Length: 115
Image 1: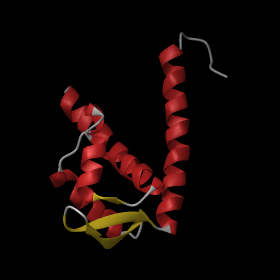
Image 2: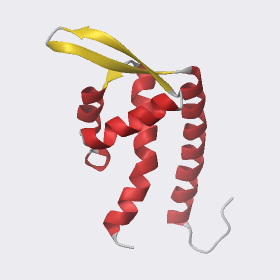
Image 3: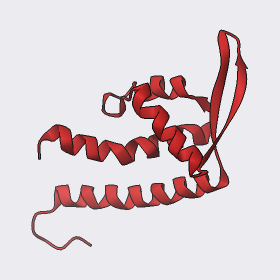
């Protein structure tokens, strides 16, 4: 497996988690999510990647959307977490913390049994 394949697979789940984290704090519109994620090179995303993910999360009822007038152009579609989305975010956060801790321990592992 080459590095770009591995990175692509790892990013797939992390993008969903990142989007849920961002919209859990406040309602966000699509291009705003693209702009925010692009602050971190490893999370950079295109609209062509983001919008299908948002549509899937809407279909699965993890997020909801509403239209809001914009001061600088046409109305924007904003996304928020549903109760199911908040539960999903909590579950992903718990799993992420466990995985992150395990990887941290593996990086330090030198043959002894970790506690």
